[in-house]
Structure formats: structure tokens, C-alpha cells
Image: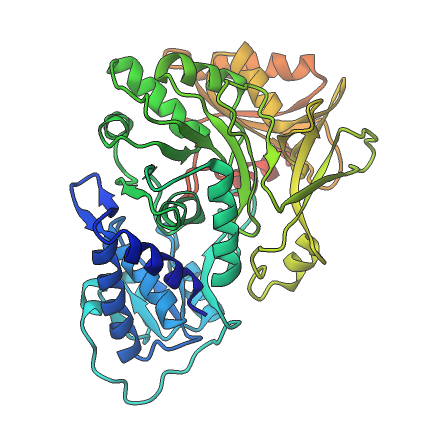
Length: 491
């Protein structure tokens, strides 16, 4: 029931004085100190009625060792936590509380708590026992061993809650650590909020279960600051989205000379990284981006840890993961299809969402919703969502490939392409773009219109100063589809 806590406690026993967590603000916490904090928080949680099988929500916590100690304290208590994301409004908070029935709120008070009677405590206060509750708190009792409920990114649809138990999570993380060849000599640089799986899975628990050093940055820091910190901290691992690497490349152009030679595993997951981006990162930053693939529901499934620069994005299965390609409707090709994954250690699926579970989990199979191509060497290249395949003149075209063509042939700094119909192949598309600096929006839109026509595509092209993003940093495709696609279809 406390597999994750016990695994990290064992590392603390072996390496008590080694640095477990440091922040770019200068805080350094050893493994022994981290576990001491976690144990005090466990006592504070239990005294406030957070016992085995209960749920805690948290909000407004910052990236530091106290947040990590809180997560370990939750594990030791046998409880589960649910982060309320920074972009949740009062309606989203109310929905989360209704779904999870927590017994305690951890974090600062804010306007989203209006009308909420749930007991609240600051994280700093959890280090001491609280006054016993008058009555034993009642609430939801998730499956035994459940330690977290994390939200999917919501980049394609509304966020859903994914539940994980400690024991399969530890096994899944250890397989990934072996795949990326991480050791206790490594340092993981995390620029994401610990509220999301990209931070906890690819950085925090990968680092701590490897006995390595976790470096927590301010998620709101400027790219130039993050670039300097990456070099100064001696980070050897990080994972970012394509737009994050683009920001670092731009920052490096303005401030040349940052040494990233120790960053031996810069990974890119969560969105497609174009060949041009990978080449620019190698040329400007001196780093070789490794493609990785996984999800909040499944864990990490694919990765490319080759030392040579590979621009095509071929990835191999993590040991214990099996991948196959199911045929796409109306498109008969053996090397391209809907990616389906199988593993013996995944999540327990979506909380209270039978429809989504039925569509995604089929026995041992996890239907990813993504299109992949099997390359000649047996590796897999991810092409984008099944719902964003477009019917071009020469056949189906994945939306990320269209964005790559736009970047190559049009004066566009960034674009997001969405199929107008998610049920059948269509030649209608919505393209939201940000023009290259100095290019009038009308010129960028005209160039994209001409490119679409040359590929037999039609639709709406909209220019934005800033493309909306989710908390994780992905383009908010659900928001774009909801706000603009309906208008483009009716016009």
C-alpha cells in the first residue's frame, strides 16, 4: 500500500546525505531531510482525518521540496491526492470536489473556495499535528493503493481524472528509468508544475526512484533564465514540449555561450517535434533531442535514446510494452495505423467515466487515439491524433505534417492545424497561426491559404498574436476547436 514511499525511503537509507531536491532559487534538500519532512506531513495528515483510502485536494503549491514531501506523505498515509490546476475556474473546482469527495484541502485560500465547507490547511502547517476532527471525516474511498488522481492535459477534450495505484506506478517508473539509463549520478531539470504528470513522471519520481537529483525550476521563468539554469545546474536529463525548445533556441540566439554539454538526455514528449526543430536544437544548443511517447493514462511507452541525431522521430517500445497498429477506416496500409499499446502496469483508468473507459481500454489494450507509422528499422513514428487526419490530394495527411509544411514554406512562426470533422476524413481544416516577426498577418494567412489549396485542402486560417495553451504547455486544441471550428464550418 506504500510501495512508492518505501522505495524512496530505501534510497534515503542508502544515500541519506545525497541531494534529493534542489530548486533554482537555491534550496537544497537531502534524501534524509526529504523523508523527515514527509514523515512529519504524514502525521499532520493523519491527525486531520486523512487516513488510508481518503482523498486530499491541493492547489496553489509551488515547485519545491515541500511539495515533494507532501506527495510522499500522502503515499505513506495510504491516501490519494488530486491537484486543482491553475486554470480551473469555480465550476471546474466544484466538479473536481464532487467527483473526488476529498476530506481536506491543502494550499492557499482563494476565491474558488467560495461556499466550500471543506477543511483547509496550508502546506507549511502540515508539519505539525492538527486538532482532531469532531467526527471522522467521510469521503470517497478509491481503490486500495490509489495514491493520485491526475488530470489529462485537456489539449484535445475536457480534462479527465486518471487514477494510479502505487505498486504499478513504481514498476512502470523503474522500467522507464532502465530505458533512459538513468543513474544516481544524474540530475533531472523540471520546468513544469508538479501538478501534472509531465513533471511528476518524467522528472520528479524518475529522479527520486533512480536516487538522482531533482532540480525544480519556476514554471513561469523566462526562457533565457531557464537556459542559464540548465547549464549552471549541470542537468543531465530534462523533458520539454517543442515550443519550450523553440524558446530556448531563440534565447540562445540572443545570449550565446551557454554550455549544455552535460545535458545528455534532452527529451521531447507530449507533442510532435519537427525535423527542423531537432536540427536547430543540435545546431544552436548543441543537444540531441530524444523523442519519447506516453500518456497520463498509460505511462511511458516509447523512446529514442540513440546518441545520433534522428530527425524522423523513430522510437522503440520500452521493455514490457507491446505496440501494434490497427487499420484506419478507409485507409489500408500495413505500416500506418491507430497505435494500440499493452502493458502490465498502467493506471486504473478514468474516474467515473464509463464511456471514456470503454472507448480507451479494451481488456489489456490501451487505444491511444494517435496515428503512428512503423519505420523500416521497426521503430515507430507518431503522426498525431486519429481525429486530426486530413484528406489531402495525395491521401491522408496528419495535422503535424501539415504544420511542418507550413513552417517550411510560409512566413509562420507557429501553427496548429485541426481537422474540421473528427468522425470521417475531410479536406476541411482550421489553421491557427502566429506569423513570423515582421510579417503582416494577412501575408501569412495568404501564404497558408495557397499552401492548403496546393494540397487539395480548404478551410479557415486565423492569425493570433499568441496561441492559447494548456497548463502543461500544449496548444489548447480543445479550446481552439470549441471557439473557432464551429464558426469556420458554418461560414
